[in-house]
Length: 123
Image (spheres, rainbow, N blue to C red):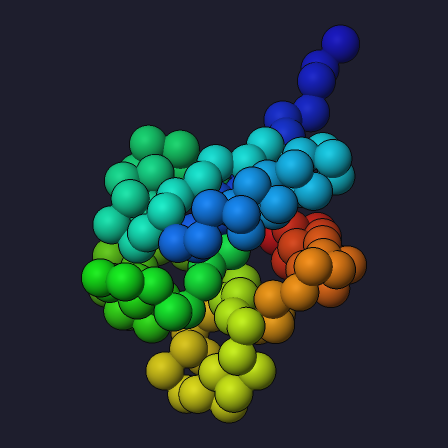
């Protein structure tokens, strides 16, 4: 009997409580979750883990989410990216249009879960 591989999600956020919340909630949905505290760590995780999708915080110290997106595109990575930010204003920022979706951070993760499901089912 063939077992279906769990989809792997890379959560990139500098706030540990957000990473842990996303990990718990997404694992409950049946996903395998890998965490990164910053963009540099995320680049390493992408190479080692080959995620099916990335959730990406925009405001991070060091390389921010916008620079991370640019670097991903330079390296011709085709992994879907959902931008997550506490600031709704980023939705209109053309520099983050390279991502596949935008979700405003909230303790209620229904929108994020629905967006993840839609993107992974379309892939």
